[in-house]
Image (cartoon, rainbow, N blue to C red; front, side):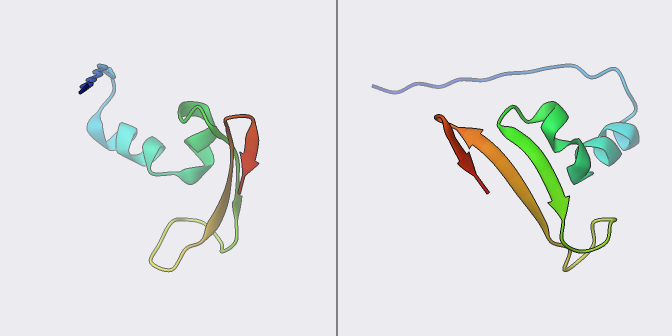
Length: 64
């Protein structure tokens, strides 16, 4: 059995604003349902070599 799901949403904001928001890991818990927190391991902003820890809840378990 094959299942093909497509989802679409229209965001009424300029592309640059959406990209800046979505590209900032601190916002991940607001728009990614399983992410509960983000902790920077290197100073922001995102750059080559940046690292951060994401904590997620999935199937009743905490993943980090």
